[in-house]
Amino acid sequence: MDRLFRRSASAFIVLVSLVAVQAQAGHSYLFRATDQEIDAVMSHYFPKGYDREVARQQLSAPFDCRHYGDLCREVGEESAYQMVGVVWEEAKRQTPIDMIARGAEQQFDDLALRWFERVYPDGVDGRDSYWGVLAASGGTTPCDETVSAQSSNGEFRIVHKSRRHRILFVAWGRIRLEHFRRNIWGNYKPAKADRLQTSGTVIVAKPLEEAVGFPISETKDDSKQVDAGHPAPADSLDVIPFVEGCGSATGSGIGTVCSCSGEIPFGFPIEP
Image (cartoon, rainbow, N blue to C red; front, side, top):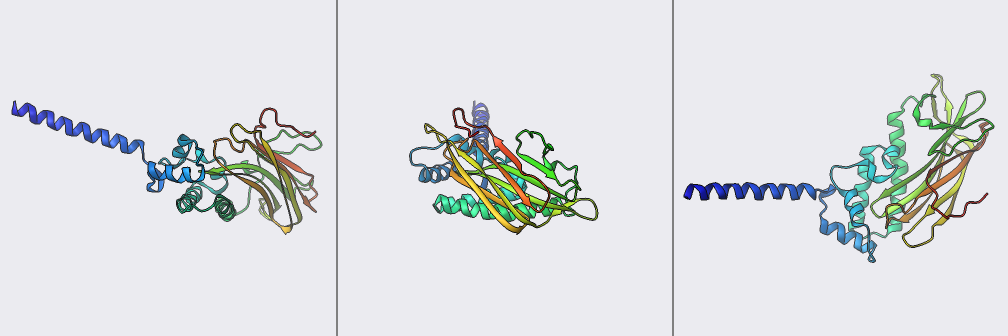
């Protein structure tokens, strides 16, 4: 009887241990976050309610690039993880959303440049997937997230990107135009253009509200790239369902190039 009791007690301890391990595994978060912390942070920014499943999904360990839109493809997985950590720390201090968004954008630019230099130290091969879809000459190019074009002599290339990112409660739509020149090895490296300009639209769609389009544009002289974007509080998964834009480089001998990402919300007015 005593032996049976000890055996039952041992089995009970093992069972409790397994349950504890499973519970811990089911609630394993990045940056040692807890359910209570996540709820406190998100409730501060969205007192009327937020998508708990999505918030916990983004902070669940291990880090998963799929939860952050186009973030990893622009800065790399390691830097994307770093950005999420910075946003989380700022959020715990209850920093205003607009300040967090500006800081994330600035950090994004720096990390994106480092990622590019690390992946393409000798320039980008003309056949690399970096260029996305090649714009049709004199025809219609299907809208894609990355569209590029080159000058008739092959000396210059431009690429236009439309991207959507999300980190916890901050989302932003972004367009970027990059200018390249072919080097002596036949690859393309970032090069300054006389003038770069890009403009487009970021659509913001909030639950139970009509979608709104925000125009974005930017122009830079003597620059290698130009960006424009619009942030929005991410109180839902698809707060920015669509972003699009077009860009051109003066002096490159290349026409306007356009790109887009996502889907236009049903019923949203489209200008001809």
